[in-house]
Length: 262
Length: 275
Image (cartoon, each protein chain N blue to C red):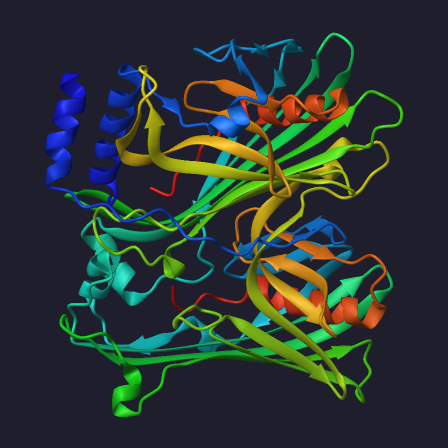
């Protein structure tokens, strides 16, 4: 009784919000087969290995090693509460790299990628940040060129925006070759945890993952983990070979690119 | 850190609720047509727990260790600011912690039996700042998922798949005040491909006291889970006082499925919080 009274007194000084709202159900997709992604993320030895594909000759441009901008210690310390006390934040980074994707049959795709991140923000404690106020927009853009099976007449071009999460917009991208178009976007999905196997009960398990989900003609064809820890790649087994190679190349870009901002 | 006052108040509220013996307010319309069963075998830590409620009994639960791993979740080089801060013994890291728990058991009511295989996974991403004055962290997002396969032993029955998850994303959270409850997504269901049982968490402040009077608690807490087929409630799992209600007008096979779902949810170990 005493405890009820004490907690009642405490609650006189407290106001509580209402309970959570109704939300849409997270999608469950059991058609996609999972593959573990093994990554090497050392400064001079970067690569990935998954679903029968592995990277080869990964090269990063020397310009990717440097970033330019004003040094603001307050940016690091005061970030935790989301309260910007610093006056100016100017930052510029690039990430330029290329690699080959190899399977048992040999080189299946060659990819060249360039990512640009430019940030020019003026912050004040009493108003929200808005780089568009002075008509200066942040740039968070990635583009890539994927050549599949050494076919120079059919090159896939990739464009993605906000992959570093610098804005509150969707993190998404598009890969196009002629009429064919694959789209991807950051999403939360329940996906199979282990590959389907005979008499394997564990293949019925699913888990919640933040992924980049790939869609082709409004149909989900694959996904790759957004987080680095415990990374997986999911793919439909009966997918067209070219689409699979393109999706594997794009997934490698998303795994091995540098986070220029978080 | 921001939610420490809420946790303290919620903990005080929960303790005070438990000491004053309150129960989840199960609607009379359902309670009169259902059987309430007290769950025993969940108190204290046990190496291989075994629970029973009503005429349902589980085997000893085969469980492994809770496997946890964590690491830096940022794929980039060190910035100039970070280099300078390290001189003063300060750092700012993006850490992801993953936990996994697997367990399996069987449940029987004397006539029918089902094998149950379960997997729990939890992942939390935090921004951790270390300074000479202490360590501060803020959760960016967390995902908890519980997946189970229920295999009734009778030949004609199909397997059931149970899916249950919680998800929190700070960038989508609209709670801003110190004592605002964060927006956490809850969802769950079980299906055999033909039928779908919805599992809805009941987070409420309405409870029934020892004297049968309905009252309000100080904070909203997770009291129970409700199992529904369509609009009809077929079961209630009281996780607060460890009771299970099963609707009487179900066939024995469906009752076994409801009992399997109830036992699986009660035997979970990972209860990851967004804080």
